Amino acid sequence: MPSTSDLAQVRRANATGRTPVVFVHDPWLLPSSWKRWADVFEEAGFASVLPAWPGGEAADHFADLIGGLEHRPAVVGHGAGGLLTQIIAGRGLARAAVAISPSPLPAVLPSPMSPARVSGTAPLTHEQFRRALANAVGEEEAGRLYEAFVVPTPGAPPLQAPATDLRPWGECDATAKDRGPLLLISGELDRIVPWAAAHASYKRQARNEQHLTEIIELPGRGHSLTVDHGWREVCGTALTFIQRFVEP
Image (cartoon, rainbow, N blue to C red; front, side, top):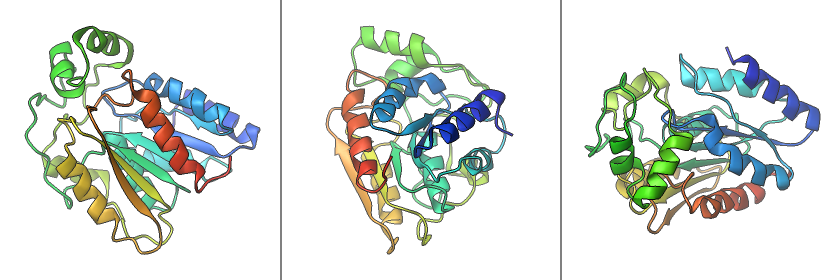
């Protein structure tokens, strides 16, 4: 069941009459990690919804939330949120979708070993964040990002969960007729979701004969690409793609 805060965001989006954009954050980050993105999309005429990560079954949770919107939204997700974005799109709930550094599905590619493998019940330490997520930025910036956006999340998926850990999240119907156009964004230096994993997800999604599937690799970027100093480039790439198919 969506939280009171999330439901309030849905009511606000409905009241605007605009097309919503639902941002699905990586569970290691706070929903506020999307705030600057939300402002950009709002300026472009969309209504932004920044729901929190649920404690239970994530795909059904976000499906319920989207079901409360009067207009079918665009969906943007990062990390595990990028995987959920593909699942949501496969259920026909998104008019267009952008999956950024998306965690791989078991059917796509087993997750590679990570230099910062952590327990699903342990908080993400600064050292783990620095080595795995913020490896492409300087030490000072990594510290700022950690303080601003990282949240200890007991029970959240590990940074590099074995493939079996992802199975309960649901199947991703890449060939669904109502999936909608999809863009995958990968960072060249991403240690959590390297190019091989992102491209394998792309190849799976590209089997969809009804809708466009695209992928782009951003040079010099790591897994923190949605929140670090280069976030505007990623945000602009996502917005431009969505605007090709969705009117605010």
